[in-house]
Length: 297
Image (cartoon, rainbow, N blue to C red; front, side):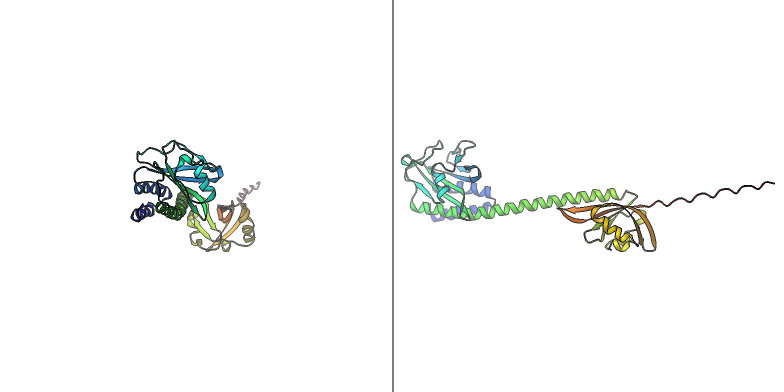
C-alpha cells in the first residue's frame, strides 16, 4: 500500500462521519488500496458477552467473508489474541499457525490490528490475503496507522452520534411539552373557573382570563401579594402539599373569596410551581323576610 493510497483511505474515513459509515469506508477503501486477493473485515468487541462480531466486510466478489450472524469468542483465534494483547498480529502462513480460525474462505496469510479507545481494544481490523506472505512490513505499519486514525474518528463519531441523539430527544420532549401546553391552555380557556399557573418563584405565570380576566394584571406578580389576612399562611401551607383551601384575594379594588384547589407541579423530581383553580365561594343566601301578620279587626 503506497503512501498516496494510505492518505486516500484516511481522507474517505474523515468524510464518512458516522461510526458505522467509517467502518464500511475503512474496509472497502483499504481492500481497493491493497488490490486483488484481499478481503477485509471490521469486528466490534463485545466484552460483556465475550464475543467479536463483524460489522463491515469487503471482498472482490462482493460476497460476505463470514456467514450471517457470525460471532467468535474473544478467547479464540488470532482475533482473540489481538483483543487480549492489544497488539497487531501477522500470520504469514495460516496453514502453519495453530491460532488461525477459518471463517470458510480461502486464506494464505492474515493481518489483524487493534482499534483502541483510551488504550482499550474496542474493534479489530482483520485483513486476509489469498497468498502466503501477503503483507510487507510497510503495509503492516500503514494498516496500524489507519487503525490509530479509526480509533480517533470512532471516538469522535460515537460522541457526535450520542450528542445528536440527545439533542433529538430534547427536541422531542420540547415539542411534546409545547403540544401539551397548547392543549392545556386551549382547554383552560373554556373553563369558567379561574385557572392560574404559579411558577417555582411564586409568581403568576399564566391565567385563563376567566371571571372577566380578573387576574390579567397579576401576571408576573407574587401570588402571595394578592392574598389578604390569613390566606397568606394558608397558601404557604397548601402550595407544597396541594389540596383544597379557602382564600381571599384583593386584585385592584376587588376583594373576593374563593374555594381554591392547588396541584403541586414538579419536573424530574424538583418543584416547578403550582396549578391553582379558583372557584367563587358561595355566599350564604339571606332568608326572605316573613310577611307581616294582618291585624285582626
